[in-house]
Image 1 (spheres, rainbow, N blue to C red):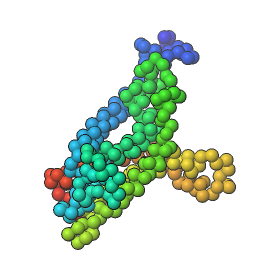
Image 2: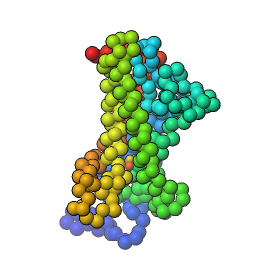
Image 3: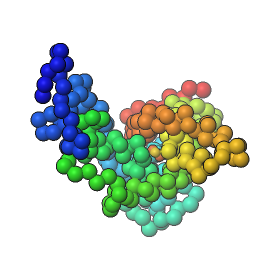
Image 4: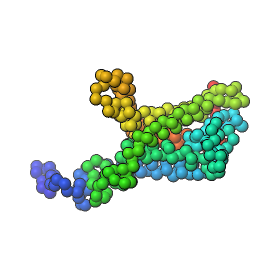
Length: 275
Ligand code: FES
């Protein structure tokens, strides 16, 4: 290390490990805050959602409370073990006796796990690969996603379609949340708004997905011959730029939605009718 006119210069070797053991980074800012927040939020979400999936109760507020609210973790409720009222019109697993959330959680989970943004976030946060820009990797070797098992992340484009399917279901749930049996038939409660905001955030997360943008604008050599796809691509591109924000907002809100439904269903709080 040499000093020239109060400027510290560190020699750089092309191809050398980034930073080296004594100097993992030259960054002076608090670069560790970002991966720390990622690990904290994702850990809290995983712990909470695992508990919510396996607790198998208080996921539906039904006619006895004059509402029709279902937790997003349990929808569509298609198992024989679903509580009365929460069951969808198509029970495809009548023989299923354990928590019905286990049947449906794989779709949204796969969509999030393979998301390009989350991959960056949890590779940085949990695997330190690398923890942040211009910070040395936590591992000696970097193999990327070119071999098993990480090459399977390429299925994201198919999980996108599964994610859209769940968005449709949760949008129907949000519409059903306007039902107030025994209280005028129809109305708006805090629970209605919670389910609506949840559905909107999930749609924003999905349409801002890189796979969605590629579906519109990918493989198009000349936009002038594909005006509809060009318009869609133009529409989605600014949303795509906010994908990170939608990813966090929708993740946190889906857990809050489950929590709200759970608190109402268990009788801990009541769901106030607004009008
Ligand atoms: S890139 Fe994040 S959902 Fe597709």
